[in-house]
Image (cartoon, rainbow, N blue to C red):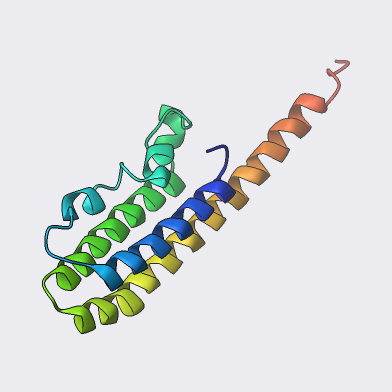
Length: 134
C-alpha cells in the first residue's frame, strides 16, 4: 500500500466485508482474527516497514494506530454478538458506535495525510532552494 488514500480504501473494503460477516454470522467465526489490528491489509501497512521509527512516534501515527485498534475491538464485539444470535444488538453496535469509530479513524487519516503533504512540500521547497551566497 503506497499511501494513506489506499489505506482509507482498504479500511472501507474491510468495513463492507464486516457488514457481510454480521449478516451471515454463525458460531465458529474466528473473532480473534477480526480483533487483530495488525492482520488486515490496513494494519499490515500501518505496522509494516512504510513508517520510520520517528514517524511511528508522531502524534498522528499514534492516534491512527490507537483508533485502528479500537476499530478492530468494536468489530470483534459486533461479530461476537452476531455469532451468538444477537443480530439486532450486532447491527445496533455496527451502525452506532462502530460506524462512528470508523468515521473518527477516517478523519484522523485525512488529517495525517494533510500534514504529511504539507511536510513533503516544505521538504521539497527547502531542497529546491539555491545554496546561499554568503
